[in-house]
Amino acid sequence: MTDGEPGTAPIEVRTSTRRRKSATAFWQNDTVVVVLPSWMRPPQSDAMVENLVRRVLAQRPNRHASDGDLAIRAAFLARRHLSGTLPRSIRWVSNQHHQWGSCSLASRDIRISERLRVVPPWVLDAVLVHELAHLDEPSHSRRFHELVSRYPRTEEADLFLQGFSLGLEGAPDRADNARTA
Image (cartoon, rainbow, N blue to C red; front, side, top):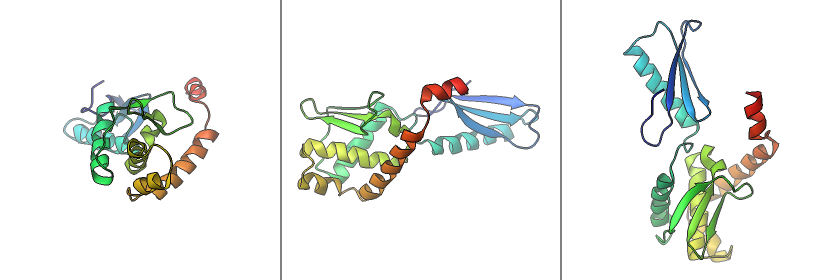
């Protein structure tokens, strides 16, 4: 097993005598697993691994984004779409199952649900702008909605999250998936 670049996933490369022509890559827990035909050797195998890992990571772009990555993105969005006001801290959390994010006005801390690690970046950006807007306007007032609408894909992200939420509600529990895998 090897580690990927910072902000990416660990990578495990396997070979298979059953694979003759094609290679594949997939997520297994938090690792990208690449399976190559056993006859394949460098530099062809290196190029294949790099290409497959890039494609798998693109399917789940925020999966391995760190809290630091969130802070960098939030700072960019705050400057570009809002007043530039920054939270004291921002991080991923695993205990938010009914909200995409939360903002504590007293501490100025923002928490983002880990369920959003698999959404496209523009959807995560919309959630970040929503939470950042609370730093300037605590309630969901008209002014708040004017701030949030400065992000151009807000309505599109809201629609995506509505569908995503329905998909999560209908999906089997993760623990059930682990037992059947």
